[in-house]
Amino acid sequence: MKTITRLKDMDKIENSLAGDTGVCIVGCGTCATMCRTGGQEQVASMKRSLQALGKVLTGTLVVPTACDELSPQAVRDHKHAFDDADAVLAMTCAFGVQTLASTLMRPVIPALDTLFLGKEQAVGSYSEICMQCGECVLEDTAGICPVTACHKGLLNGPCGGTNKGKCEIGNDTDCAWAMIYNRLQAMGRLDRMRKYQPPKNYQAVSKPGKVQIPLQGSEAQ
Amino acid sequence: MSTAFKQALEDGKFVVTSEIGPPKGVNLDPMKHHIELLKDRVDALNVTDNQSSVMRFPSLGGTLNVKELGAEPILQMTCRDRNRLALQADLLFAYSRGVRNVLCLTGDAVPVGDHKQAKAVFDLESVQLLHTVRHLETGKDLGGNDLDGPVEFCVGAIVTPEADPLEPQLLKFEKKIQAGAEFFQTQAIYDLNNFRAFMDFARQFEVKILAGIVLLVSARMARYMNANVPGIFVPDELIAELEAAPKGEALKTGIRIAGRMIRELREEKICDGVHIMAIGKEEVVPDILAAAGM
Ligand code: SF4
Ligand code: SF4
Image (cartoon, rainbow over all chains, first blue to last red; front, top):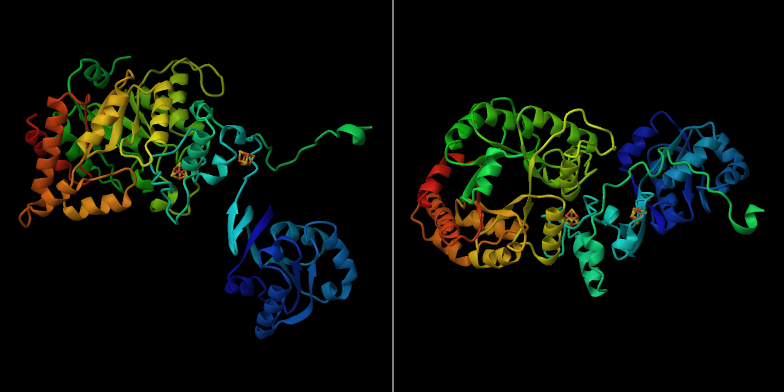
C-alpha cells in the first residue's frame, strides 16, 4: 500500500512559484520514490527545470519519509537551505506537504497531486484498493471492494452498464461486480450477494476524520 | 394504491408505455407536443432523468407536464445526482402533485455525460431506492422519523435481459423484486428467443414485465449499439433487413421491425406489455403501434 502521486503540469508549478526566486526542493524516499514522482532522480530533474526557469536552488533533499517526524528533522538539519528559500517545492504526497507546511513559516508548494491509496499492479500502473469508508463490507464481497472498485460504489450488484466483465466507463476498467460475482460463485457463497445491503453510513468516519482508539492489552496498563 | 397505470397492469391487458425526454432548456413545446401525440396511445409515459448523464429539464417537471396534459406519468428517478434527502423530498413532492408511478434507477456514470467533472452522488442505488419508496409508505423516512401524511406509489425498475454475463443481472433482478418492484421495463430487446428464455425465468415471480422496444433507424445504428451499448444485442437478420431497405426507407423498416416484435410479444403472450423508446423520433410511435396492429 502506498500513496499514489502524479506530477502536476510544469505550467502549474511555474505559476505557483511566480515571484519566488530561491527554491528548496524536498522529495520523499518512500511512496513518492516508489511512484517515481519524488525520488532522487525526479528531484534532480526538477532542479534542472527550475534552473532553466531562472530559479536559484537553495537546496535539494529527499527525506526518508516526508509524512512523519523526519520532515521537521530535515528542516533542522538543512536549516540554511530552508532559510534561504522563498518557497519550498514538495515532491511528496499531500501528507508530506502538510507536514512541511506545519513546520515551516514558508510557502510549501505541492509539485505532485495526491491521487489515492493503492498499489502498483504493473510497472507504472496503479490501482486504488480501499477508500477507507469506515464500514468495511469485504466479508460479503469476496475480498473485492465494491465501494472502491465499482465506479458507482454500488453495494447490491452490477448496474446495467456491466459489459463482458468490463465497466461502462470504458478504459478497459474491470466491472467490480462481475469479479465479485465470479469469486463468490466459485466459492459457493452467492448467498452473500443475494443479501440486501442497506444504504451505507457515510458518516461512519467523522469529517474531518478524527478518532480516539482506546489502548488494548499491555499498552493499556 | 391504484394508479391508472397500475390498474392497467392488473387488468391483464397488454400494457404500452413510452418515454419522453425533457429538453435542454425551457422551450417545452416539443416535449408537450410529444406528450399530446402519445397520450391517447399509451397507458403511461416515462419521463427520463438527466438521461445519459446529460443535464436537462428535470424528470419531475416533465411528469407534471404529462399530468397537466391529461396523461399518466412514470417518474424516472436516478441516484446519480441526489442524495437520500433530496430523493425522499422529491418523492414527497411528486406524490403531492399526483405523480404516483416511480421507476427506480441507479443512473448512468457521470463521465458518459456532458458534465464530466461533476461529483457523482450514488448515496443510494436502484435496490436501495426501491426500498426507500417502500419505507416511506410505512409513514417513516430513512432517518426513522414520522411523516405527516404518508405516500403510496406504484414502483418499477429496469432489467437487462441481454446482459453479459446474465447471471449477476438476474440476481439483482430478484433483489429488486424483493425490494418491492411491481413492474419492470427492460433494456432494448431484439432477439425474441433470448427474451423468451428470460421470461421463462421471470415468470416465477409476481411482477409485470414490459419489454423494451428501441426503434432502429438504420443498420449503422444497430451495429453501433452492438459494439458500444452494454446489454444490447441486435441479431444479424435484423441488421440485414435494415440494410436491404431501399434508400431513405430504413426508418420505415425500423418501424416495421418494432411493430412486428410488439405484435409477436402480444399475440404469443410472451410478456405483459412493451415500453417503446423512440429516442428523438417520438412522432413515429403511433406508426409503430399501427404496425403492431394496435
Ligand atoms: S468496504 Fe472498501 S472502502 Fe470500505 S473499508 Fe472495506 S475495502 Fe475500504
Ligand atoms: S459496470 Fe460494474 S463496476 Fe461499472 S459502475 Fe456498473 S457495476 Fe460498477
